[in-house]
Length: 419
Image (cartoon, rainbow, N blue to C red; front, side, top):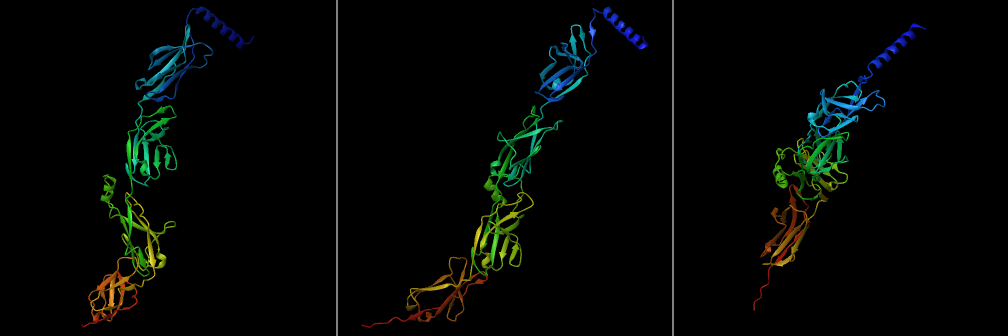
């Protein structure tokens, strides 16, 4: 027999004698339990925490389990199940350990596992660029949660209804963006966070978002929306003042008066709009674009808007205005009651240039200098000397129509009868 085999026999004999000698004593098992914590070692108040005492290598032995917090027995001190659950409170933070127990044996105490219980964080909902915005602006709602956790999923609510990602609402982790605000976006917003569906943060305080219309734009056209070739046409973009906007929206904000800060844009056409640029034909003086000499191709619909670097960064687009451009007119001269009258009668001459407005009328009588009058002139109690040729034309700014055709007034003396 070799020396190794002899040593093994002696060792087994020693163990057998020791077991017989202490048969009535409690046997100490040197199995190391391990404490496992779910859902995590960092939890929030109100979550359910489950501690599991896992005796590795314990086989099918029916154990009871003793629990310790900060090395002190925990109430309940002993459980029959390996799992021990409770609703977390902040005061439950500490080091937890366990051991397996039988009537005749027990394991060592496990290594301590630290459980940290925190109060539910209260998110802060921030809104940019402001809680009062204009229609069309992009609004960012950010849910700020001060917590060691980084795996939050965020939930946004408007007037108690949950908002979902869509074409109008885009989500980037802790930020929900309203792509282009409309008046229906006005309301109360809140947010909260989730972690893997197991935890919910407190709800943030409500934040009210006000959405108001952009300032209005109005396009005015002078001298008229109906002009003639060669005329100068002024397109003026009039944007609502700050004071008017405040009155219209019944709201006071700290935005500066924007009246003198606009850059103006003018457009021609509706479906396929063309932005008008300064050129030889188009001159610009701040809020006014002038068509230097209108041509028939200028006939179209026009609209305008304002731009600025601050807020609001744009105005509403104006309503479209239709500009009519016609060939240079020739007034129509008419006479009532007729061109041949008697002394003492009343003659009325009318100079008509159509439905366009803003004209001043110039009259010619024979070879006399032109005189200014209305579109209609009347000569009462005509004399023989009033018999003459008459013409008219119209003036608007520096623009003149052609001369009308000539009308000749004949004045004859009345016959006298003696009985």
